[in-house]
Structures are given as C-alpha cells and as structure tokens.
Amino acid sequence: MKQIHLLACTTVVAFCLGAPAAASERAPFSVGPITARPGEMASGLLQVPAGMDGGTFIPVTVFHGARPGVVLALIAGNHGYEYAPILALRRIRPRLEPKEMAGTVIVVHVANVPSFLKRTIYYGPVDGKNLNRVYPGKVDGTVSERIA
Image 1 (spheres, rainbow, N blue to C red):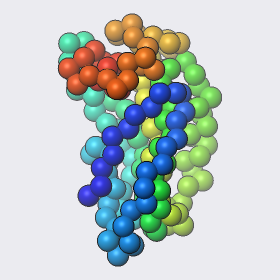
Image 2 (cartoon, one colour; image 1 turned 90 degrees about the vertical axis):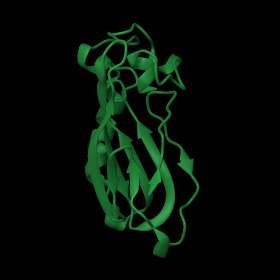
Image 3 (cartoon, helix red, strand yellow; image 1 turned 120 degrees about the horizontal axis):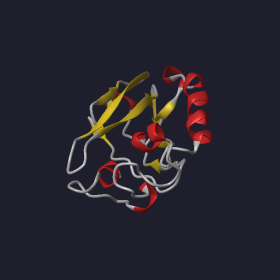
Image 4 (cartoon, one colour; image 1 turned 120 degrees about the vertical axis):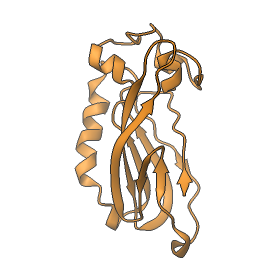
C-alpha cells in the first residue's frame, strides 16, 4: 500500500511524484487512514492528535485513477480566511472521475481547520502561529506545527 505525507508551503500547492509501477502491480493508495483502490475515490479525515493545546482534523479526498500516473496534491486552506482556493477545490471535486483517470489526485480541502472555523486570516487561533511559517512542523509541537 503506497502512502504519502503532505507538505504545503502556499495556499494551493501542487506537486508530482514519480509514476507508480505497471498496472498489474497497482495497489490501493492511502493518505493516513483514507484508502482508495484503483478507479475509486475515498474521503475522510486525518486526525491531528491533541498535544499541548488540543487537536483537530483535516478533510481529505483521494482520487486514485484506474491507470498508473503521477500523484498531484492540491492543498487549500493554509490560511483559514482565504476562501478562493477552498471554493476552487469544491468545484474540482465533482469533475474528477477516477475510473477515467491516470494517476492520483489528493485534495486537502482545508489544511488549517482551526483557522477556518475561527475566521482568522494568518495566525492560528489556538497557538498564534502562521501555518505557512512552521513547515516542516513538529510532532510534539503546537497544533499548527502538528498540522504541518
């Protein structure tokens, strides 16, 4: 089972990884607990466990194409008050058909849910940190650092 860890430095980020092995060897694709088989879509939540200041979740959808190809990650909502990228990803979602696709598309609908829910522009409401400035993050850090 192939897994990927997401890393974003701007509000909407796209990156490509190498093409997977031959179609006969294609396996399901997982992002944390969210797993999509070839030709399928799967949605769910990545849990960011509570630390020194509380936890959160990140909504993600994986479109795993029927044929091999590159991996594209689209990440919106690093800043909770920047709605345009979040709305753009909502418009893309119904247009992707995994049975007709090659490769995999990972959609992170809102990376910084605490900021989105509290309508803060640049800084997280829990720890006062800018998600774009704490990458690559810290497993034992504040909530923004754990999101990163």
